[in-house]
Image (cartoon, rainbow, N blue to C red; front, side, top):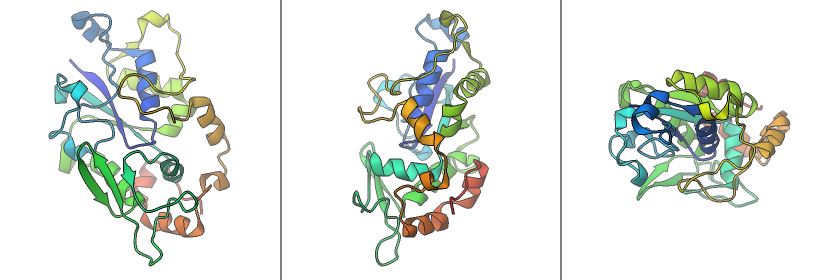
Length: 254
């Protein structure tokens, strides 16, 4: 019996997607077997929501040891890469690279070489050549059926979750064989507060939906470039994978 599982790199809206589904979707067939509380919506895929796909068959989180791998339907969030860079500067989580508050994301070093990024997944650190190449690798690997298997997964843009949350959530729910929660009487529950629930959520420094809508509502080129130096903009345009950006209809601001 399937579960919905959420994945995505840091700062891409994983908690927002999880809470929207938890508040608005249920798998009635699962509930018939396991009870009303078992609605089939989980905060993360069994190998960890921020963990790369290559760990899918090698790692399981402490709270998901009883979840069969093939019973999880991954729903993966992705975000505008330029706004993602800004968020990574504000909330680095387990990513480490050379930068300062006044010089971030600092994609290239003074000698012109790429600025490597170290990310710790569980106990194992992984080194990427740069922040853009971390983004490229994380998502291109998830898209690769040849390398990591032809199992169902769906990708969701953070921007669509914010501006079309009801339509996107209901579509994802139907896509996975779910139905609107019967106990909500047909009402859709928007996530108006910080998208944080459960023991596996991040700390208290998250942007709530209203703040995010205000920030994204000023969708000017200047707003997308906020905080990025001319050198960072040039490096980002060079380093982000153009095919990946085009697939999700993201563009460069300059």
